[in-house]
Length: 366
Ligand code: SF4
Image 1 (cartoon, rainbow, N blue to C red):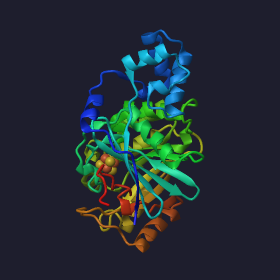
Image 2 (image 1 turned 135 degrees about the vertical axis):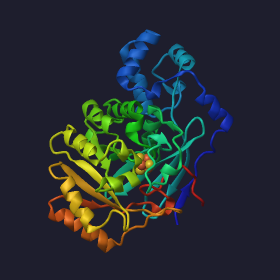
Image 3 (image 1 turned 30 degrees about the vertical axis):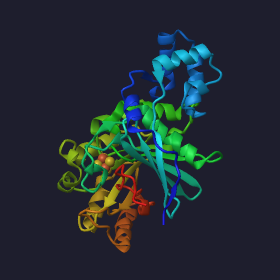
């Protein structure tokens, strides 16, 4: 049985629509550098004022200018006139048998998105969303059944982590962050980059870049850009060893095929001692033969990488099945024999629809 935690009632939809139409600038979407410029140019205020506001938003997690008590009343009033604090409303927290927590969050327009907090030994990993829906259309993914409704603002991406901090309570923190929830992060590049700058800022949550992984289905032109802009980890959802297989699973393979993708991965500027994570969702009878395993060893040759094998998590209506555990092990052995580091990742939180590829922004039945 999963457990549902009580959450304060959500605001009415009329109120949310009003916030969405709010023309005031969203300060929570701005990395500190940009916030400093905005304070100088728009308000004629010194940079340290912007730093104070940044710290209120991202360290103290306040959601109203009136709570920023080290700012003058006049400045707080002025901020209220010209700016707003973007973000999300927490709607529901579901707790799975294995301790995985899924947070259902609403945007100001009432769209629902999900983020998942996964306990792993003594650490907490959070999987965050970057879009409402997704346009990539991966055949094995439940999120793909939702059309892309919109990109999340940087404030809405960052707020998933701030809410997670709230839910796990003081004294604990999110240790690892993966951009692997709803949406293709590199399809919402500028907002994802702004969120990364904010989350890693020393005057914010100060998360280490080594602890953050951005995952892509293979948006090749943005892979090099990400590597040049910020030194976070990269994961790629490969999932196939031939173009025919991959195009059937991930339609953008028609635009950027396996060869083009592998070239982009080889050119990615990896810092020393870091590796690219290659994700491989295993679909019984489709991409899990031992010939696939051998082809995979050849494709990855020379790439500094580790492989995550993810036995498929079925969802109602999915045409794919999960391979048997002993077959997954045989596949892994082929890779290990070729000297690759391999992890078999059985997803957590399946009983609350929080496993990989199961996020759809829908509240769960009790
Ligand atoms: S796996 Fe990721 S990129 Fe593919 S459809 Fe699902 S959310 Fe989009």
